[in-house]
Image (cartoon, rainbow, N blue to C red; front, side, top):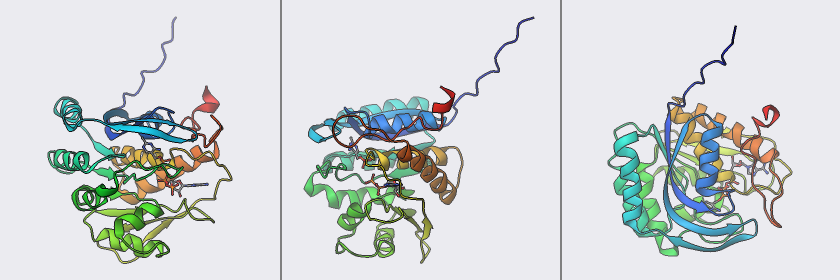
Length: 275
Ligand SMILES: Nc1ncnc2c1ncn2[C@@H]1O[C@H](COP(=O)(O)OP(=O)(O)O)[C@@H](O)[C@H]1O
Ligand SMILES: Cc1ncc(COP(=O)(O)O)c(N)n1
């Protein structure tokens, strides 16, 4: 008698990332698709830019023509469909405007996670200096959740550098997203992220132990993609944030050295014992 392996469960949730390519494989589209695979959803991509990037920084980048952005988006959405969208690097005001227009065509209720990427971990810019206003005014109103790190929250809100994170969250909630998640990785101490609903006064804290690991390339992309994946699977926003943070923290703890600089998080950390 032969025994057959159990039928695999098909990944039925479809998640689309609209972001830039990281040639080093640690952040951007590459981190997004790895995260989606690890969380059991079907990942799809719309490329907005190509970066020449490694563990030492971003050496150069080339935005894609807006026709290429729209073309990819329409191909995916009109046939396969989406259960959640995540946006990452949108390099110019023109690309932001195009993506904002495309998001408007989504069926009602599709969650959108906006990671307002402005720079790499090394501080290399990934957004044109004149595009910050477009990000705030055109994109944030489409976000179910916007996930700035502290420097991005300062830039988008226009508030001074040492403004308390809860105040940054309140200022950004006024720009139209459903929820704001201000990430705390850039300050010393426990990495606490604050989640504020548009109608709430006080943010909910999500905290973890700080991993003593410099290999944090791709943490923001990973968190936002995990959040979009969990929303696609039906979690409410606070539950999705808790689960996305748990996945990201594990990836940071397991992050490893590649190249001479900042290595990537380990997207396979949960599966590695089974490999
Ligand atoms: N050393 C660390 N240990 C544990 N969690 C971290 C660490 N650094 C960042 N994080 C977490 O990783 C996620 C990404 O945060 P952050 O590094 O602030 O954003 P970004 O990657 O966009 O710059 C957040 O949930 C943050 O709290
Ligand atoms: C193409 C691309 N997109 C985003 C980031 C930000 O990376 P991080 O998640 O480390 O902030 C990056 N370095 N490159």
